[in-house]
Length: 393
Image (cartoon, rainbow, N blue to C red; front, side):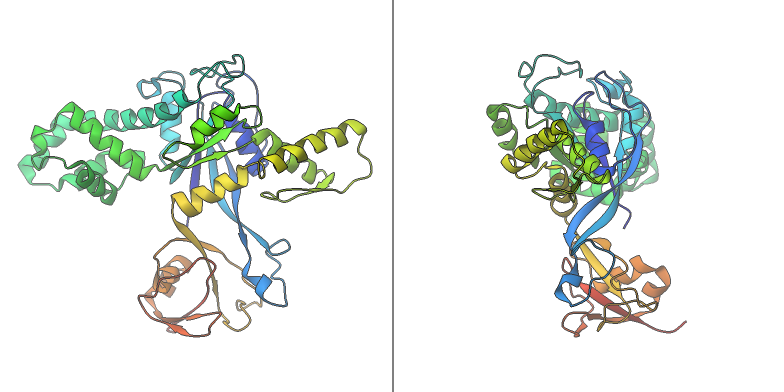
């Protein structure tokens, strides 16, 4: 499936460093607001164990049994309060986020930047203040879109008997919202049946619920290595997904690995020195990073991405093959593809993801491990290897 994760947060929270660490894309990183003006796009990866480790042969699409499945990542312009009213680069920021299925909110856990993103003494700003305002800006952005034509739309719904959920979804289409999400939000809010009686507060409540459903969020408590224990405990104690991260540490490791100085894969909890040409200063720097990731169970960047995909969005990885015995395609490539799917999907859903023609001609599927034929309603599991059988064209 096409998967896009948005990186959001106030300026100087380490958002662009997170993006560069996750994608190794060439982006500008500087200590002043609005370094990121146009959205940066790159490829990040989720990390999973490759099924080929269960066999005597490596597939060639993993590294030592670790598979990296690509997703798109967008690093948008920094957000400041009242962005939904066009302040700062707010409109640009919000328009870019419409494509994201989930958002990683990068927060400066060290308290070294104020609410506007300006550098201040570490510990002088409470990062808890940064948590709610992104949700507020997204909600009010949707309210603004809905309010543009609400009076006219409301009359049209009443006069023509339109389905209100479809009408609202059409209005919020540019925000990446569908009618199913509107339906769920409306139900959760116990909205009055007669939409004409909805107040401004009702619209805000509805949009807040739509925002929570259509733009699920995980917090990256960044600069965790500089943050006080109290700040980290306060953030991780919130009733939401929070992962302490150090984007600077991950970027140092990824850059060193790319340059051949160390052997390291994203998500590893340690690394090995691979070069005998490092200076004493470089060795000291790497040992400092080693101590940091050992104390914090890694840099947190890969953990944050994986949690966003597997826990926040509730997705699984499935591997379609044409030979259930050797796990290969028609060209003898072993485990050539990895598809991200919603948990609860079945093999027929997978067939349509591979190709619409295969979905239309689907007959049945076979589990690559058990070699058993799967029932039509059988739910796929994370890591499944599946052969799809379809009628000939």
